[in-house]
Image (tube, rainbow, N blue to C red; front, top):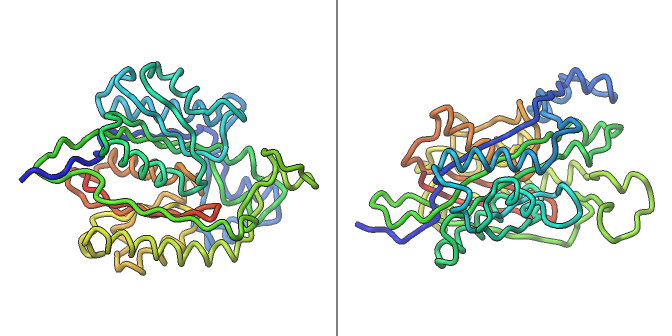
Length: 327
């Protein structure tokens, strides 16, 4: 039986800075402790960019690895979508600079900013472009240099974030017999309380204080919204596609907080041994968390062809979403 053409994960890649900042290193910067960070977040260390590393270099490296994994030449890529809230420069789009760095001269390129939901928003767009026939090879990247926008004097936020990039090369499934590809996507947003998680600086709004140049977050409020929204999104995509938690091979959630991950898995009855977790190594890398986790799961053999994979995320905006794919 031939299935409808879908966007298929043909290749995956990830990149992270070599510099690592442990919780014990953070103890020297702000009033906190390794025990406090681990028990409340699950984070043990994070990768932090040096002066020669940035969103552009990370995105390019991850993108190049995804192309190699897919066996696709840069000239064959016809669209690059980069999810980021930490672009290399104000403009032009970092995606255009990635296009040049990769030599993908036949591709259109665009940045999107849905914060930590950026990869799933991009996947929604990539799926639509491929299913419509508008594009054949879409390079979707989530890349962040969060260390450049956190206040390293704010112990409530600086302990949470890290830098990384993950990429996926998506191509038509060509109606293959096993039904592989993206089975469904679901995205939503609510801009009623943007101040809950934001960075005021960096735009055209005048800033009133130096702190507005940095990421600001109402931690407890964001935690509550994330638990509810990620659980809702996971349930919605399962209903939408006709699957249940028992059908899921792997849950790959946004890596923001271990307690949020556990709550999301419990909401849809997925045991933790089916959940991909790497927050201990990277912290919250925003739009990069899901593709990095996917690339690592594939490289380790944990994620295999035919697996049913549920992805779910929540971010500033507020934005949230979920996707289901057969690998």
